[in-house]
Length: 247
Image (cartoon, rainbow, N blue to C red; front, side, top):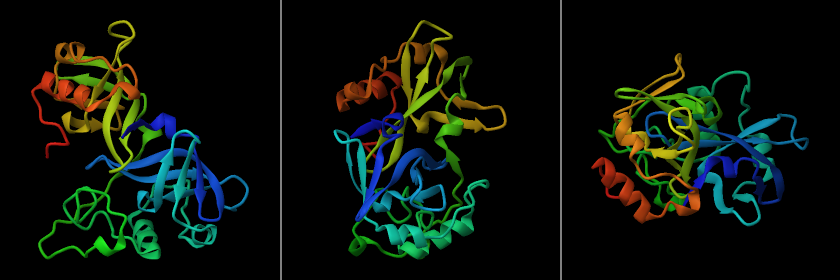
């Protein structure tokens, strides 16, 4: 199911023995565009104001109740490696974090989740990286930081990043929601991460391999509840590109 990241922001996080806080941001890697951590504000029950929760720990998203179930106890979270919130997430922290919880390290392999293109929560299905598996260096970014970045097509600016659509099973960013109101009135469109050529973080600009006119003529985005598989097929057919579900 695809769901707006903005919708999940503010959801309460419920662990096995109580509520631990609310979602305030997401950290994703800019290679596979997968959500690596939900950033949680813990309120007053924990001395650290923010903690990171990996999708490996998530049980279910309850949209009706506005909460996310987490397969951890408060004590586990309290004893987890500490994050220095005024610094970027370091690779050393991540190694300590994944070792502490006993989860497979997502960068140990060539797929989105290391050894697998899918998020596998069942420990009996985990396996170490095989010889020859390519490891890669994750580059974590905050969703809050990329929101507002300019979108530049092959022939000029076309809009700015207004949000994200997440796959709540694979915890991948499937689409960036683009607001084009500065170029033509009020239209929102979707751009898939795989259509991105590069990102200039210093210039706050996302470059896409699409023309302005092709984006302008693409199916309009009218809300997450209307993004069906038929809509996605039509969107990819418009650009003559394969969908992520085909591969």
